Length: 353
Image (cartoon, rainbow, N blue to C red; front, side, top):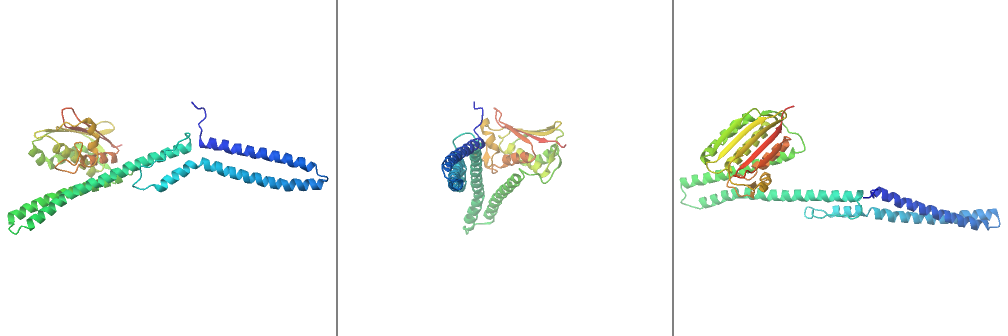
């Protein structure tokens, strides 16, 4: 174990201290030689002139040599910064995988280069995620637009199309338009939530979570009944503080996800409670078995059941929006995949102070 960390400051102090020492020794040696030569002069005036003339010449040589040596030492010490600068200048969105990978002692410059490499890693991951998000969003939007275009072309190109056929086309186009509208709304919600991640919510007021649940269940009652889902609730007082619209969207997305990814004649259970400092909501449902290793991926955009773009309804943005709403409210989300199937999600939010 090293007693003294070889920091850049310490090494530069040693280098420049050594340089000053060498310059001082050189000046002493030159002064001694000049003085010895001056003493051999016949008169005091000759000795003084010799000492001043040659003293200035040697002094200029020593200063020039010290400046050159100082420049070379500084260039050597700052070489890692030059490497960092070259890397930064060559960066673009297409080559964020470049790294400095500075070798040498663990000094301030090594720490700076390692921090820069870590930043590049985060930027590269963010750009890759953004590219994937744009590609997935484009794919999801292309599907309903293609349906609309195909239905219009096929139906309008048929000269014998009657009212029934036109109504059928209208129903298909309306459904595709509704899907595109839901996707655009979800994307706008994501953008809005991402914008407040480092800021404050626009609306902050007391919200009773247990009062929102019945309204959400009313909105999905038809879908739950058509699938034969048995809904159980255990609603106790659960007060938090935040944006009522976003919190209703949070509960709605969780309940919709629990119904759409459930099995026929399955079950759904919703519980709300609170402690001294936390309000919490628990939504669990039956469904297919999900590997626990895939649970985190469910909260990524365009992911459904651990897979990408496989559901017949929705765009896979529901739980991604849930996660961002919880983070915007400074809360926590936990999800567990029971071994018998389905998913259990617990949301914890801060209570009013």
